[in-house]
Length: 303
Image (cartoon, rainbow, N blue to C red; front, side, top):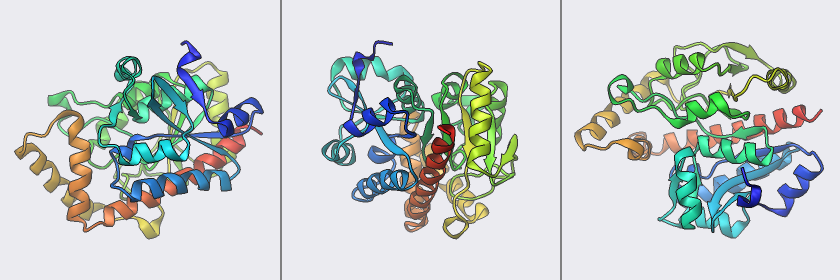
């Protein structure tokens, strides 16, 4: 790709030029995942956590016909407050860039931006996946196909529990994406530490994860990896309780004919209401935890 489409903050440019560890961050979580002002507070704190752990944060978004690798304070604020921010996945890049619109990057889009910039590690909340009833609707997130083809490791708290986790893991297995349990043998389900499903293998140290990733890419095995990092126990929600809440929110979404890319924001907002705000607190805690682990892995990859 023509790198004329990329622009960098000075901090990120210097880090990449001097081979320092860099961690990519998405913007959809800011624009569509959380309300203001929690979203901007979270975005700034996540960047700080990454710096505190020895890496440089690169929050990725699309503005003014450019893929911005790293955002300044004014740009972050725009993603947090502008109601016209579009949600961007792989298919949307050409239109959003050529039209000059402002676009927040999903997991798939952030992976693309990170790979173009030469960044190997990305911290997010949870990945997209196969939606419940996906065998009927064919609603499968582009995050999964991106993981199969783009060489970026994604540190996440598993898949969002609004999804069909079993089918999501089957899809990842088919496409050769390693699912690593970080200090866990069970795949986490975003709000909860458990899901009832296992991982491919467990690793307990950032250096072990870095070694596995380096080996994968040196073998020429294309694609990323999922580093599934459960939400800290003190911030986790009960698996059965959150499952009941999700079932109620899903029923309401179906009754209101909410489909496509509108489903996830609706469900997350409704789950927040039904849990009286606890789900948002859990979401923020798991993002901070993922940022810390991602920074440690990025540092190990440079050793």
